[in-house]
Image (cartoon, rainbow, N blue to C red; front, side):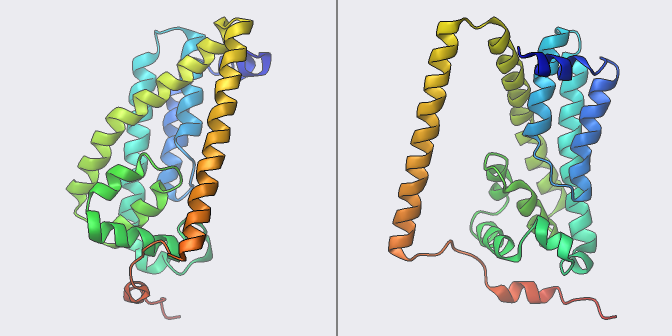
Amino acid sequence: MGDWIKGLVLGVSPFWAPWLVFALLLLSGFGIALGEEIIIIPAGMWLHAHGGSSWWPVILASYAGVVMGDILWFLICSTFGNRLLHKKWFKRIAHPKRMLQAKYQFDVRGVWVVVLARFIPGSRTTTITVAGLMHMKFWKFTLATAICCLLTTPAQLFAGWWIAKTFEESKTTVETITKLLALVVVVLAFVLAYRLWAKHRKSGERIPRARASWLQHFPPKKK
């Protein structure tokens, strides 16, 4: 493991690590769009550096932080959405165009959109925002989120643990193969993304979205 990574993960004590992870994840419940993976994966690296004795506290803190953060933001959007929707900072978090796209998906797939959003980078906050504005039933949102996080949270922690283990124990040959595979994956991803973009541009089709009139149900608050 690189010296800078080692210094970072070793700098947090076993007592404070779960609380720090929980606090950072809970910030998303206040509209601070932090990707859960950028918090949970380093937490997994920390677990590797400190042994297995802190696994359960960190797993519970990560799971509780993600679920409670999502539920808190859902409740804020459900309760104060009409006041927040026309704020500039709110539009930066969830752009109206993306919200209409998410609304269309809710109309077609229902609560399954909450499940799918857990596996699509960049869609989590917008999806939760629209679910709150639509006043989705609380138990449906909570159940979908809680079940999905049972899978995604341990997986992300394990990914961080595995990355740290690989950096520490890998030999030169393994490192070379890993870098080559990573390069191939990145190149293939760019090629696929370009082909999809070119096909979409050629077809002239737009990403389906709900009618803009839906946003008219949330008029700006009169001064």
